[in-house]
Image (cartoon, rainbow, N blue to C red):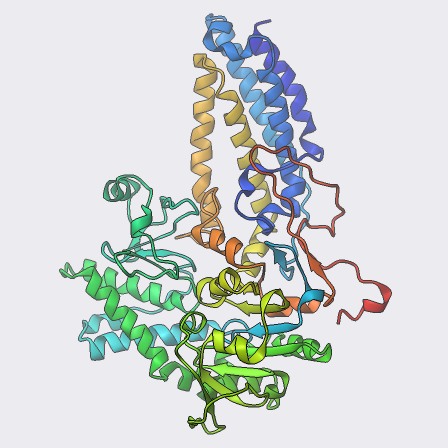
Length: 578
């Protein structure tokens, strides 16, 4: 029997190990503790490594790496190799269909960095999308008001009124090329995910994207700045907060209108006008007044923020609120969520803080605000419980409170404005609130997604290992496998969002958003209510993610050990989880 034939026979025996527990490593780079790497991924993708072991055994057979020289050139030998390869393919696919489906709990808190709650004495919070969660009605409201501002104040065409907000069009974390008017998703290595570049409401062909950027890599000098803004020569703007979803959709709709009607326009002007219109919705109080007038419509009361705050208060924890929103807006929302006595829970309340400048600008002093919203002129010598303060800066906050370092944990939804400066400059612990996480985990828990990803990774292993054989028969089969793998990529994207895919991944790599999340957030979760699942003595452990040159060592875990910092069984005295 020829070397390749002997190797294939050996490999066929190894494919039987697909049902056993193995390990999954390669595609987890950059997401230290995300559910993409945990739970069912560990259990089901362990099977994939068995394929790798089998293929590796094939390659270790005598003469297997000598390429075409080690394989007989007869057509019968080539046909035999082809049949065996396809037999291997079918058996591998069959084995990947028989998998267990251990789910990831959407209410889990995931750790990027080890952190113990027993060390946390002070808890800080943003307000919007951290303590207060909003319904989709709010995005529709912002879109409609900003659209009308463009028409009424900036003299944009009346035909724009026909456009309505598209809830499922954009995802957070996208980049917008201000000069080219292109919305796109970029990975952690500054590569554009082809198939996710949109001009208006329509995708741009990959060939055109590659021609415009001379490839798919975005140079550092034109990427967004540290806070995701397009300033000082940076032509890319990154949309990092949830409030930016209506802005991205409005940009796309206006671009679409101009293109449909063959209107010549300057993309930079369009971007600035839309940005100003969105800003007016917030700054001029239009959104705030609308929410206050119909709070039950806009605030989603299902998140148990009030229970989290009362739990922390009952355990004697200090708490503070730092938000960019005005006091009246916060007061109405917190009264609805927590109750009229919500201020009794907080030791310090700061409104209109102007983050991220709050964390860097030492010049702005605090001003006290009365219950009626009037600003007082007295110098602030201490921050008192029950009082409301406006603006100020973090350095003065630290001086007046003495709350420094890793005993402080601050929660926010904006990776840059809320978390980056605190962890990089001041050593606070940080928690990111990512509401999209819950829906993505539900999708990942479906059998369809598990099967698709298991087979995609198994197929990748087959291709990776069999490419060492250079004989025509093997190469022809491998090319077919490569085509199938490429065809599967859009399916993995469309499962989450048909335009831009997952918030956390491109086809394979972590997104730019994911990389910043892993750097600036010690822990992250779908909602602040996830804290109710944990004792305040709990330690969050990130899983040791094997580097590409390391051997994977995963300890065996039961079904409740999801490979993430999921709630541990509580001791009898802790069964109340408080």
